[in-house]
Image (tube, rainbow, N blue to C red; front, side, top):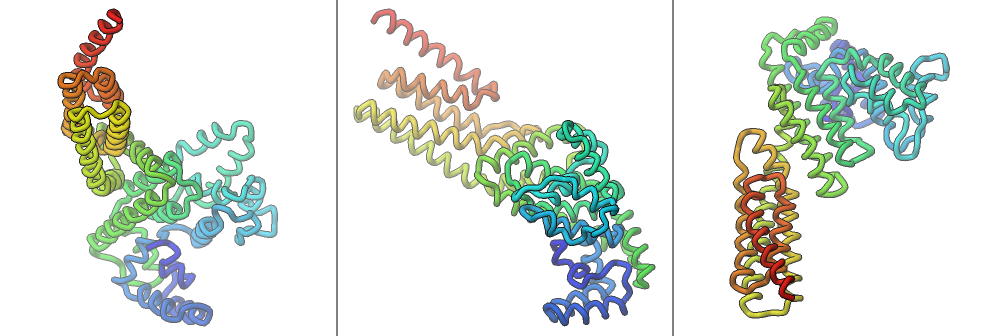
Length: 413
C-alpha cells in the first residue's frame, strides 16, 4: 500500500480522528471523489482490526502538518517548478518557505527532490555530506538542515521513515546505479530499525486519543510489519525494473552485495538487502543458464569449424562470439557469486565455465595448432576471472607454455 493509496490519505484523516470525524470526512470526500473508494476507506479506519494495516502503512507518530508536507513534497518532486509546492506559505518569514525559496531547481530535479534526498542519509551523516557536496554554497546546506528539522526528520520513527522512503523509491527522478542503490540501502536500514513493541505503543497512543480499542496482541503488529516488508520488496523490484539498462541494474546489485559483505561480518545485515539479492538471483539464474548454453554452442561450433578446416576469419568470428558470451555470463553472475562467497559457499559455477572454455583452447592448439586463437581465449579467461585464484592458477601455466611456443616460433621466423 502506497502512502497515496492509504485510507488516511484518501479521507484526509489522521490517526487521532475519532469515528465521528472519520465519518464526516468520508461523506465530504465522497462528494468530490470516488464514493465507493471513500466508503471503503471509512470501513477500514473504523474497524479496529482492519485499521491496523492502514496504521502501519501510514506515518504513525508524525505530526499531521509534517505528514501533509512530506506528501506534498512527494507529489511535487521531479520536474515540477517550486511554485507548484502548495504548502508554501505566502509569509516569507515562515521557516520552511524561506528555506525552500533559496534552493535551486531544474526541470528534472527540483527543490522537493533536494529535500527528499535528505531522507536517505542517516542523521549523523546528513549535515557532513551536504556540507561536503555544497561547500561552495554553505547556505544551501544550512537551508536543507533547517528544513530537515522543520519536518521532524530527525525524530521520525522507523516505520514512518520506511513508508516515506518506499513512496520516494517509486518516484525517483534518477535511475542510475549509485542513486538507486543508496535509496535501497536507506529503506533497508530503516526497516531493520523497526521495533514491533515501540510501533505498537505509538499506534495505541493515537488510538487512546481517538477513542479506538488498543491493540493487545503484539503479533498483529508484527504480521503487518512483515506485510510491509513484502510491499517494500515489490517497490524495490519495481525501481530496479525501471533502471536504464541491465548493466545499471547489475551495478546497483553489486553495491548492495558489497554492503552485504560488510554488514554480514558485523552481524547487522538488513534483511531487505538479502531479499533484493535473492530476487536478483531468482530472476537471473535462468538467463545465466541460457548464456551457459550459448557458450556451449559456440564451443561445439568452434570445434567443428576447426575440424572441417574453415577459414581463420570464420574461426575468429566464432571466437569473438564465444568471448562475448563468457563476459556476459560473468557480468550477470558476479553479484550472485560474490554473495555466495560472503555466505561461505564455493564458486563452483565460475570454475566450471572457465574450465570448459580452457579445454576448448587446449583442443584448438593440440589438435589444430591454432596458437593465436588459443592464446586469445586464455588471456580473456584470465582477465574475466582475475579475482578467482583457482582459475588464474590453472590458466597461467597454460598461457605461459603457449607464450613460450609463440616466442620460439617468432625466433625461427
